[in-house]
Structure formats: structure tokens, C-alpha cells
Image (tube, rainbow, N blue to C red; front, side):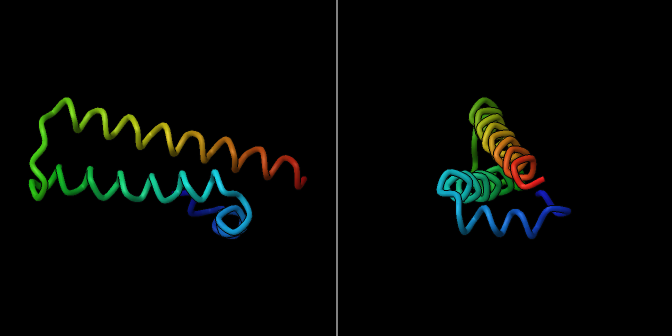
Length: 74
């Protein structure tokens, strides 16, 4: 996630509470989705879809924060 912007991501993780919270949430959701997909944590399809949507919303919000941060620095 955001591989080409690692330096900026690290800055945001240090300086931006919302970004840090979303990053942790995204990691947790990613773990839950992976566990459900391999069968380690059984889950019905609807719950899995909801988790994936929530994960995507977190990633989208982080991308907006990242974009705004980069625009302000330019």
C-alpha cells in the first residue's frame, strides 16, 4: 500500500493522528480479510464483503490525506 510514497507515509504516521488510526484499521481489516479468505476465520460472504468495503474506504481516505499532504508540500 502506497509503496512509492513510503517516506511521506512515514511522515504522516508520525504527524497525523487520523492517518495513523486509518493505517492501523486498514492493517487489521487486511488481516481479517486474509484469514477469512483462507478459511482460518470462518465468515459468511456478506460479512466478508462488508470487511472489504470498510478496508477500501480506509484506504481511500488515506489516499486523500496523502494527496492533500503532498499538494501542500509542493
